[in-house]
Image 1 (spheres, rainbow, N blue to C red):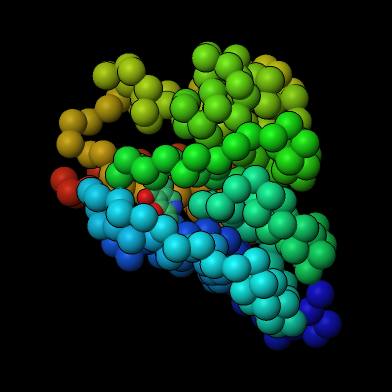
Image 2 (cartoon, rainbow, N blue to C red):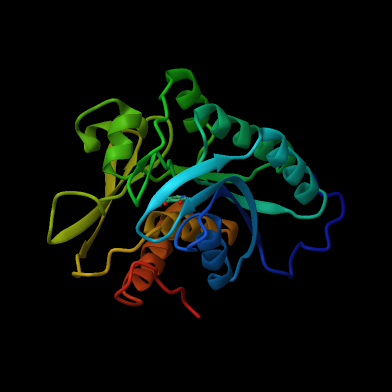
Length: 259
Ligand code: PXL
């Protein structure tokens, strides 16, 4: 824990991302840092991996050793009062558990959001096994998990994403993202808490606005808002607004962030 940090208020709140490095800047820590900065939060990043990809083609991933993460966590904790963390691409569930333990050890009361990247948007399956114990260890520590439909089905071991999200939400709030759903006209995200669907976020799909890494941007925007002290519902509202602007920013796969 930082003993006397010069980075407390009146300076900007600080958020951390622990995720993969995507050299195209569309996803991973680069996307997260751009989002944090745009939302008035100072961003720190620790990488779990170096991915080899551009905006359309994913060629592989080189994972970093856990001790590299440990070293950087300890160094950051000496100086920075991190309020919220976003966990992105990790090698397996044990690696996610490891990140959560480090966060709790170094930053008491930190708000942890997990964007469970099980496959990359450019078509690469990370082949992560879903063990019940690890999953429970993770979910019980989170303020929010943000799976897309396929991720929810895999995590919740169900062929129905809403059913899976409902089950998962008995352990932590779930924002089920509709971006990859079969509905061609609308994209609807569902917030599940304690087994119930509490809120829907529906938007009209606009042709040609698919973006590489939009899931990263949404979870990072929510994390920035949580670092700012917003409630979970406020953070999701702000996150949705931010990602909508990002999706509409241009007609390519790589979106622009707010100035
Ligand atoms: O969008 C999922 C994602 C997350 N994190 C990293 C990625 C990707 C997709 O390619 O590369 C590092």
